[in-house]
Image (cartoon, rainbow, N blue to C red; front, side):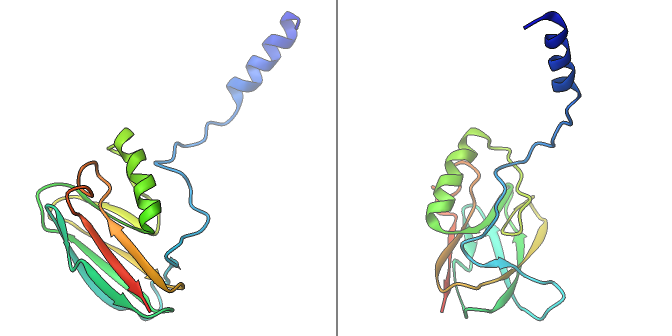
Length: 151
């Protein structure tokens, strides 16, 4: 490669737009259903997040039902709510061990600071059992897991 070609390639690489870093991989689909429509009716379920549990830890919903989760962190540490399958959450938990400060910006997950609250609107389109868990390192291992049974 001659010097002019090398300089031209370097200029192209350096002038390429920089894409913003994502906190984690982008999801094209969600195993537990789909993001809900905040403008449509939904049932509200409040979940308290504490060290190291969710209350309630077991929820039943009907397939097709839209739920507005109101997540209240009543604890003294940050906590997360990530709705997925157990397998997906376990895989994601391994990634969180490498990047413990990872922020979630997906419709099925949120990190909530102490004494704060957040909401997620979710439509359950598939029957089965799904989980919500806190994937901050050690939290899930200490029992911060809940289950949603979709009938």
